[in-house]
Image 1 (tube, helix red, strand yellow):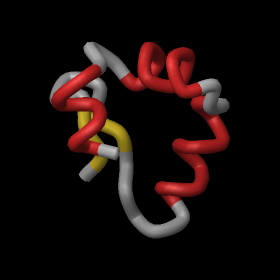
Image 2 (cartoon, one colour):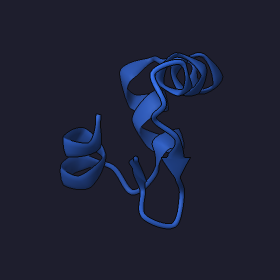
Image 3 (cartoon, helix red, strand yellow):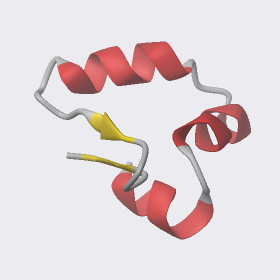
Length: 45
């Protein structure tokens, strides 16, 4: 995810639109494994 965000998209919202992903679902799935989106850094950590 972070590589895609860093290399191709200015934001998580733009990545989700481009890849036809539901942003909230993606966030919840990654939070389940302790990755949280930081909009300022445009990455999950």
